[in-house]
Image (cartoon, rainbow, N blue to C red; front, side, top):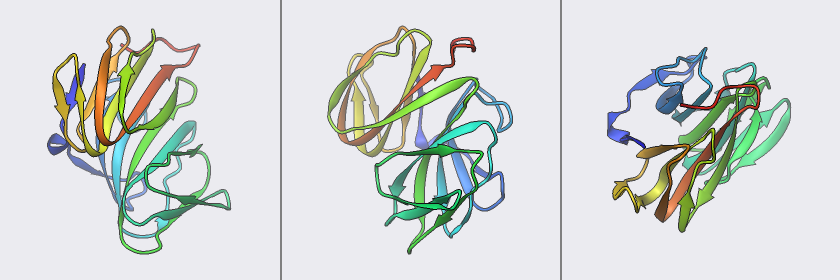
Length: 191
């Protein structure tokens, strides 16, 4: 298990230069924006504007803070509400429209030739048991979460990464995103 504390993250400019992001975790470790298999981050969005294009990437976005936003993907508008994951292709032309104040969103990106991601919101106690070849990232978006067997408390926006073969039970106060990352059949498993 790896723990990623929110106060240890650094910020980086978006690919298109329109905002900032804080990387939560990336696979493989140390991978950059052009060679990751999967990447999880938080982004500060202060104004409406276009999203960066990420060819070959599938994206899931979840609103964490703020009143909401509209995401127009290839000309089709979608209302994005807090704690409701929305998945779309990084190849698509996407634009964010903010109805009011700035927002923070939670992003999961996977290179579709190498991995898939399932993002679910958890509000109670659940077991976390990555299957062979999977890894699971848990991050409280509100409140906190306790990994029972590891005796680790995650405060808001801290994260824990569990690799295959590990297991724990997470006890959630608030809303925690649980992201299951699965290697594509043609890719090696995550180490």
